[in-house]
Length: 357
Image (cartoon, rainbow, N blue to C red; front, side, top):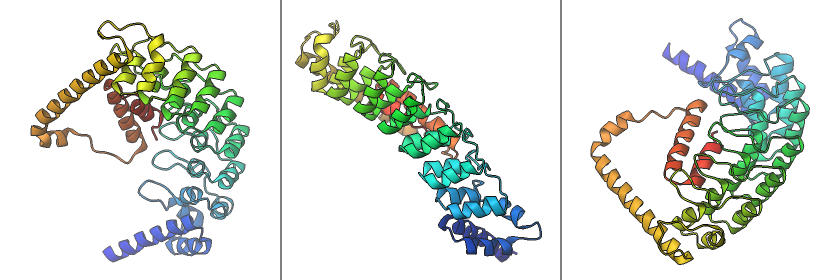
């Protein structure tokens, strides 16, 4: 009995592997062995892994268009079948950059606006990897340019991955340059966090707000954290306010100084009004003061960690178990982003918010 169950599981694994590698003859052969009278179409449709991914998901993910054709045209499988994460075959194909397979699925009626459980569509994934050809095709088939996922619109995905050409395509299709996630992350914030000067310039030209804030941090705070002179200058020339404070009352120059980014401090110094708590208002004085403050915070954090280490078993029990489900991964990324903002680690925070995949 146990041996029969094991043999059946192995056949299922071999079947799905055949879909992955494009071995159509083997796939048909195993499917016929697994068919217990319900017919090939029903048998194949019911064969799935633990994440409810079937042959069509795997074939699409690996760009096996011929297998997709057999499954859709001969066995009449649902082109929009969803797996455990709510992902359809076209989302799998788009994520991996399989343009020909994704186009075939669209031509067979795949829904371009179908969203996964975290709200991501094929357009989001195409934007994130910079697949302009597929993006154009998806948009021509009715994909929504400003579709919101937990990690934002396709424009935020493109900006967050520094995909300047993809960003151009989306802007040409009238994507909103000021679209926000629930956490206030925008394409411009994502571009700054990604360190993409070109994406930043394109977004500024498109009318993106350079003074938007997420978690209390503006693009200028994030740029100061990174220390990129080019990005800082671009933001300042576009009207970014060097005197705005974050949730801890810090101006961008203080963030730059705490990170030891001298070039950023020098750029911001002539544009920033004096901070009363810093007695020596010079470039060197600001750097010395903020790095001293940063060291104090670090020492305090170490003390807290030592105090907490005595109850590690309780901590382990209280920690939530990490799940493979996409929704939980997104929630964890959001939590990391929240914590990072509280520590003034703006780059880390925006990356967590903008790339909840």
